Length: 190
Image (cartoon, rainbow, N blue to C red):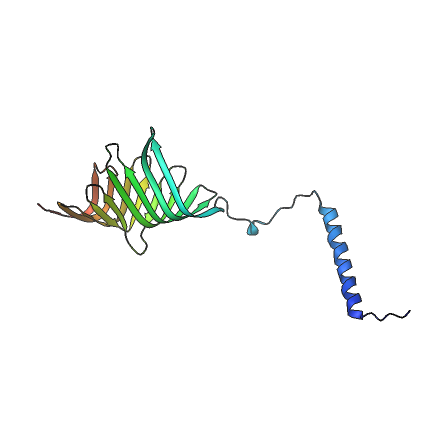
């Protein structure tokens, strides 16, 4: 019996068998051995993305009462307990029922402390209160434990009886106090 076999098939089969034997030998030698991955190929410590989601809600309560709640269009949650948010709305609820809504394009939230940094996107950062006030600026920083918002940027505050602008603002979200750092201009209206 005379069989004609293509020489290329024999070479390919031989290479496959040699590679298979080499891979199995490497597996048998290294089985049970821990290998260190070079730091170049490891993710940065604490910044590994754990989850991305559309629609994000975060609520903080005090003594069973909602003190503030956050809704975001999307969120990326990281290993270091940080969340990168887009299209944010934070509603602050005072004990007397008054509300203030903070709106921004992008934010960073510390999910442990509740502190947040909100920055403008196509539109400025805004706070709208239930009393009819509107505050606009480029960025706001929220300190959850103190219930204080702060900006070093120029701002404008408009209400039915007041127009105020300046640079740098610190305020209690319950709207009990506001402090302006510099360049204050105010117009009182009747």
